[in-house]
Figure (cartoon, helix red, strand yellow):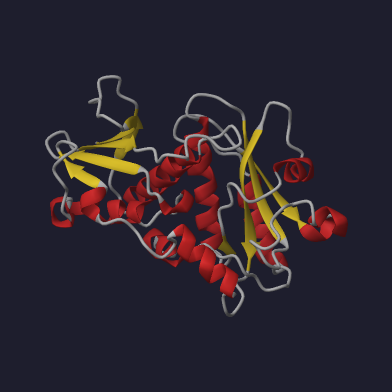
Length: 280
C-alpha cells in the first residue's frame, strides 16, 4: 500500500492530458470509489458523478467552459452537495479523498472552481434542485510536456509554492510560530496540510497546537475576494481539503484522535474557528 504522504507529494494540478481513455480496470476501480457514499467529518455526504466526454454530443463539450484551461480531458469528476452547516467543508474533505485515490491509481487531476460552465456540467451530472455543484475535476493521464498555457496558469495560481511553517502553524496561541521539531509525531501531518491544494494557492488554514491538551485547533483565514463564488465559499472547501490531509495522515501513522467543534475555542481576530482534532 502506497503511504499517504507519498500520494500527497505525487499529486499536482494537471491541465494537459493524453487524449486516450482510461484502462477499463482502472476506470472500474475509480468509479467504485466515486459511487461509494461516504459522509465527511461533520455528517454531510456529497454526491459525486463521473462524466465521460464520449457520452456527450460534441456540441455539448463546447458548453462545458473548460477550453483554454483544460486540454484533452475525456473524464470529469463532478461533485454536488446540499447546503447545510459545514457542508462545504465536508465537500472538500470527501472530494480530496477521491482526488488522492485517483493519484494512488496513477491518474492526474485538477481542482476547478471558477473556470467551468456550471449549468452545462450540472445538466450532464444530473444536478438536483436542492444541490450546489462547487467544483469539477478532469481525470486522466498527464501529457508528456506541459503546455505554455499550463505553465503560465500554474505560475499565476502559485501552484509550485507553499507558505512556510511560521505563517501557518502556531504553538499555544496565534502569535507563536510552531517549528517542525516542536510538532513531534504530528509534524508529518502538518507538512501534508501545508502541501494541500487551495484556490489560487492562498492556503487559508491556520492551526494552533496546544501541547498540554494535545489538540490542534483549525482556523480559516479568509482572503479578500474569495468569500463566495457561485454561492459557495471556495476557501471553506480548502479547509475541508486541509482537514482531509491531516486526518488521513494521522490515521496512517496510527495516531488515535477525534474531531469535534468547541464553542469555547479562542476567538482570534480575522480568523474563523472550524474544528478541533483531539489526541486520544
